[in-house]
Length: 305
Image 1 (cartoon, one colour):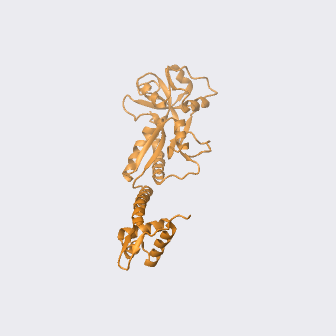
Image 2: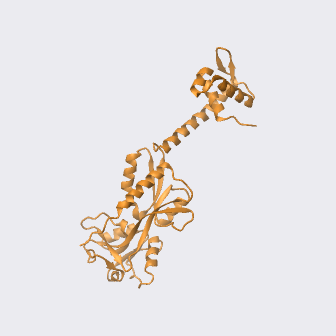
Image 3: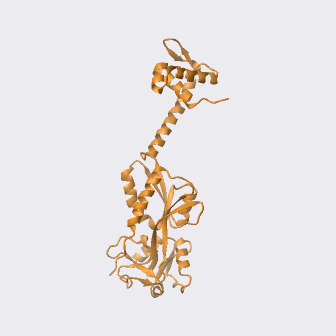
């Protein structure tokens, strides 16, 4: 059995609401014969008469009343869905979900969210802040529209668009003996208490791979899971630490400073990841564009003396 078309159902609801074929035809931009054919087609398909017609009036039959109650709710819901989708396409409503590695969230997200909200105040922004592996999983599982991450370049399930290279630096208190150096060699770290991330962190893997041919770093005084925690330890004078540069807090008296590390200098590539072969929603596309623009100015030169 064939099913009624959306056009047939909308014609039925419009005639029922206006109680006039002429008025319904005008509302639907149809000729009256075309509208009559749609109603007749619907009645033939259902096997019932929906309207009692005279030359002067149109009235719903009992079965027509019953059918209208069932159809009108569905049509109203469909109209709301269309309007909602149109609003989302025009960035007048909806939401966007972004995964962000913890070590970059404070530098990237606040200004980008502010700029996005200024342009699209009715779009909800959701942030998933996790470690690199969890953020990658949030994209692959469809929980996040896209993510800012430093892993995923070799993963066939995601597309990785690089934004910038972020160096690892030595984080130390502003008053530390190494704080005013132009650069520091890795072997010099052995003279000071060191805090580091555990092997659960992807940053630790990057550092260990880069230093594989050098003497091992000294045994740390403390080991943590997240790079952001290291900054708090350094601020409180527990030791020095190797961190991605974007984890450094805004420079202020008594705060933590970053000193370039060399021989070797190591870095990680930050980029936008999204599921392979999937288009971003208009909201996600707009946010990703702002994020890419912000990345071009985020790494300013480190202060030198």
